[in-house]
Length: 331
Ligand SMILES: [Zn+2]
Image (cartoon, rainbow, N blue to C red; front, side, top):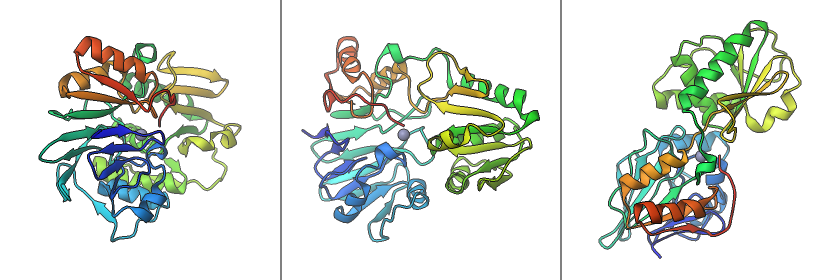
């Protein structure tokens, strides 16, 4: 098959390309710097000829401590192509985190593509494909949120405004999401000082350049006590060490389905802020892209079997989940 998703999450495209996990192929593409798309990267760095990603993603990898030797580091601008053997590889923009990309692999005989993680609007559909591999993190209507990302952002700003007079507001999220939120808050005139741990801060400087927004004052948080009005950005894995500290703690999560913001403890909120297309938007993408065949990534998405059935019945496009029966949820 000219495209597939293997049981380790490797997305195979054409003959020579693998994206987002390890497979013995000469080109390893990294669609973006989330951990569920970086699997086996060190082995790929050893064995592949090139590690292909946007310049922003390569810079993110540097900050996260991955060492891609310069002779293997191939930074590809959006919509610029690179040929290897009989195939042409192109990275197409996707709106997910700074630097994220879709992948297009073309030859004389075939044209296949992979969305990587994406949200809508802002991700142009890959059209005219023989096979499209799609991320469907929310693969069925039971995972459909009833509000948009702007509602979640508004809810977050309300929580900040209501609480910041009495001390810090802590925000926890994944790399990429935190930096996007920094940018969105500054764009909306939230001018309180930001604090962030070292890698969150370095990623933020790169992301701010990518988004073309000045994120203003951001200081390094190195464990000091904070008793003033500030917003502190932390990787989500650190929240259990921090949530007893004074202030209000906000977890940015794509899996809060009850409301844009939910108070889960005295001083703890979940804000439902997803970086993925909703189920409806996944279908909208497929409808516009109209591939001859669809593969739904069931390694990273939930309910991929449902997406497949729905696409076949409603859009009349042959669709299969791959690899079968591997339920999970992505960053
Ligand atoms: Zn992601």
